[in-house]
Image (cartoon, rainbow, N blue to C red; front, side):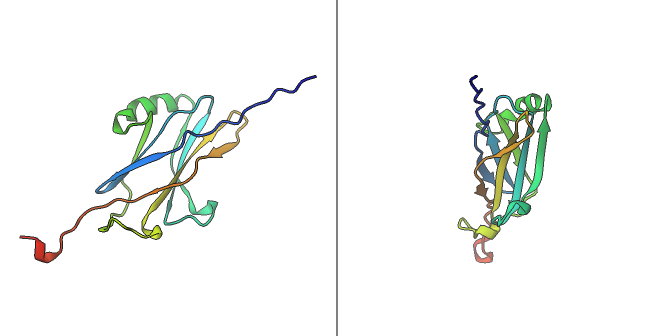
Length: 132
């Protein structure tokens, strides 16, 4: 009797771009998932408990969500995080960055997570002597 080998589903990874006041995240759809979960950590995550959920989509919500948001980034599914604190430097420390990961839930209800990605929201504020 041969065993059926089941390949684990993997999230496609996550990409980001930033603008003043927002971080835009994108990922491609993964086949045969029952849920997506986008998580964020404010500052470098030391462990799983440092992440909090910012988006959860399940079942039929996934397709409609991805269709509605696809124009916001270059991926199939997008999320714009506007709940960020901006920085006035192009070299922020790890504690000034936001760390994200996308999880996919398989039909057996196990979660598989992407590698974490970090980004920040940069807004230039001119010193008083430059403003007129």
